[in-house]
Length: 125
Image (cartoon, rainbow, N blue to C red):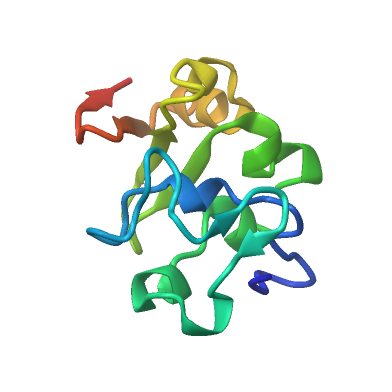
């Protein structure tokens, strides 16, 4: 599993395996190489986009285990230097973002949150 910030690791989380970050590599709705609750079946040979991707949970030391994507059913990330939080609404849990603690905190602070789904639709909250 991928190492993150500090001593965090993906553990059993495979939520990013449902993100459309690598064109033509994804199954419906999961990557064909995803082994749920295990990890990537081609981890050593995974696409560069997968190697480069780290969710917000992995890069934010203050986020707790109960905020890990497989717990919240929401994958969060930020563009480097951007004050925008992106939330991926996976088709299996399309409304999960409405209960996400981190999204609520960003909205309360007046920051921009954009929810995306697999069709590429974006919704600003």
